[in-house]
Length: 362
Image (cartoon, rainbow, N blue to C red; front, side, top):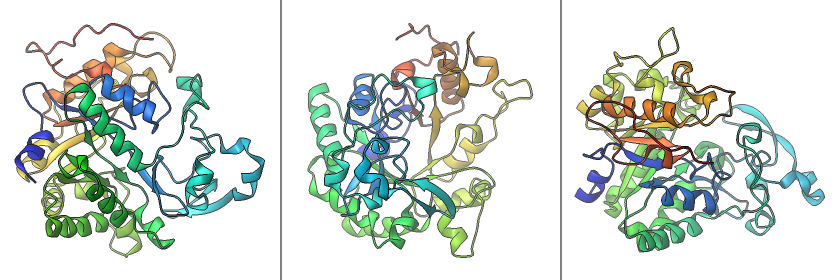
């Protein structure tokens, strides 16, 4: 990594860096240019596109390769025959799959809210599904407009699944990064819950001297294993990977470890944030890894019970979200993935440790 990228992935005097998780996905349908625009407008340092591949091999932004829950594909009679059941990472999933659609077919669809009961559907049907190339162009334009660098942290989704269909998302992503002047200089992180693809990418990046690109090992549920390791007959749980020995191994190929926030701040029996921590951040830093945690969400449903505001699951409790963010900052994390980046703007960490007053927003 070059010095600028190394600095870009670490917390600084302003606190942890902020990553717009699927854009500002609490406020706009996820993985749309409009969601990314909102995240950047609200101060995100990076935006995160999850990447899957169309039938004709184009990288596009969707959280999963099943697109029935995030697009209006169910409205189109001509695509009814595409509905099927398919195993994805060993789990049977029913729906419409991106690998069965060409880009031209995908262009006809529009994004919908994945959590309508929680976040409403006011923006359903308005926005297209963007390609990664379009996201890069948009990030470059936004950087110029706002006068600051906007980083990208794409996640390669279900790498083994796509390879089984004859695709190579890693090669496609590197080609896309090389093709754009912006992604040859701006900080770019490549994430995966798998291991083998990151190890391969480490070799390819070093050979290509792409020093602005860093690698991120995502950690899933503690009792689960990366799918590629499990299918190779060499399962290792994410909890084992989170040990000091596991983190040292991750550091041989990755620059960042990205766990769920409970790896860093578990809950007490009373539903409050633990004040003792787990030692995860210290162990990761000792191994030379930055720590990026996911995911901060502002609704009551996702907050620790002790931090929730009055009302139901869908209430946006911005003070509770700020308290949780500040506790993670105090624990030493380097970056926060957030569904609502504007709720935890950079520079909010106070010397007294008190959560800032944040005005409610519609």
